[in-house]
Amino acid sequence: MPVLEATTPANDIADVKAADARVPAAAALPPLRVLMLLESSFTMKGGGGAESQVRTISRHLRRLGHRVAIVTPLLPWGPPQTAQRCFGLPIGRISYPRVPVVGGVIMGARLTALLLGRGRSYDAWHVHIGHHMAALACVLGRALDKPVVVKFSGSWEFESGALRPTRSPIDWFRRLALKQATCIQAISTRIAGEIERRGFSRDRILVLPNAVDTSRFKLRPPRKPGGPFTVVFVGRLVQEKDLPTLMDAWAEAFKGRTDVHLRLVGGGPLEETLKAQAERLGIMGQLEFIGHSDKVEELLADADIGVLPSRFEGLSNTMLEFMACGLPTIASRVSGSEDFIETGRNGWLVPVSDVGALRDALREASTLPADRLVALGRQARADVESRASLDRVVGQLMELYRRARPGDLAKAG
Image (cartoon, rainbow, N blue to C red; front, side, top):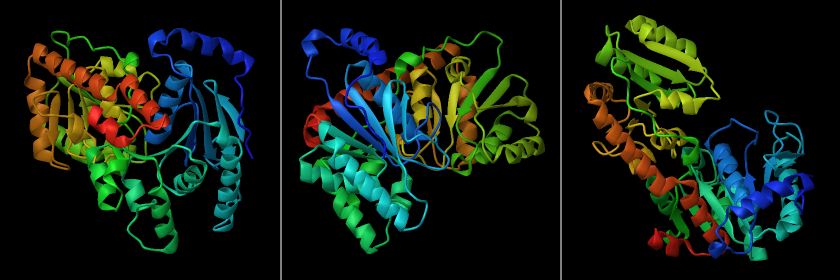
C-alpha cells in the first residue's frame, strides 16, 4: 500500500516558502490539506482531461502554499511505482490483482484502509471521475465527517461508470453512495442537468468548469499581411473528435486554395485514415499532421482560429486553451462548448457532424478582417479568464474544501 508523506520534504521547503510569499496577507487562512483521488493513471504529463485537471489544480494549490497528495490505482499502462513524487506532489498508487471481482474487493479494502488511516489527516477529499473510488470515498467521508467533492466530467460516467442506466445491485449501491457527497462538481450545465435527472439533489450540484492556467498562454499577435489563414486542431485523432467531418468541410470551403493551412496536433489510430481521406479530397497539401507536441502554446500563437468538431465532450481543455490564447474557436454544439462559445461573440457554434455549417463557419472566419479576428479572440480570452481561470476555479474549490455549500457558491458565482 502506498505511503503518503505527512510532512513536506526538505527539498520542497523552498518552493512552499516561495508560494507562501505570493499569497496576499489579507487573504491568509490556514493552509489546506487536500487528498485527490483519481480512478485512472497519473503521470508527469499527458493523459486525458481528468488527469490534466488533477495535475493543473494540484500544482496551483501547492503554489498557494496548500498541501496536496494524489491517490490512484496502480494500472498496467501507468508508472510502475507505488510511491512517487511529481512536481513536489506525493503520489500513491494502490496495487491490486488484475482478477475480476477479487481484484476489485482487494482494491476497495486497501483504499478503505488508506482513507480511514492517513486520509483522516486531510481537510477534504476531491474525487475525479465518478465510479468505484468515488462511491467508497463518499461513504467513508460521511462516516468521518469529511468534505467530499466528486467531479463528473464526461459521458463515460453516464454510459459506463456509476451513473449508467443499468439497475444491478452494485449500480444501485454506487448511486446511493455518491448521493452522500458533500458536493457534486459538474463541469458543464448539460452534465449538471443530467446528474439531476439521475436523482441527485440540485442543492448538492455545482456547475464549476475545468480550470485553465491562462498564464501559460499569451494573446496571439494579429496575422501578418499575406500570411496563410491558419486553423489549428489539438487532440487525439480518434472517432469522437469527428475529424472526417472537418476534412469534408475543409475541402468544400477551401479546395484548390493556396492561402489556407490546417494543422492537426496530436496522434491517434485514425491518422492514416485521415491522411487517405485528405488525399482523396485533394487537400493534403493544405494540411500538416504534427503529431504530439510539447510546444502547443507556440502552435496556438501561430494560428488564426481553433477548431473542435467533436461528437461529444465533457468540457474540452483544448477549447479553454484556444480561448486563453485569444483564438476565436469553431466548436460543435456539445457539452461544455455550448457554455463558452457564442457565435459572433468569441467564435462559432455549429451543429454536431454538420458539414455545411462547419464549412460556412470556416469560410466566414477566413474572410474576416484581421482586427475583427483579434476582437473575437480578445473576447474569448476575457470570457475564459472570468469563468475558468485557475484563481476562480481553485478559489471556489477551496471554499468547498472548507465546507461551503454548493448552493451558496452557485449564487455567489
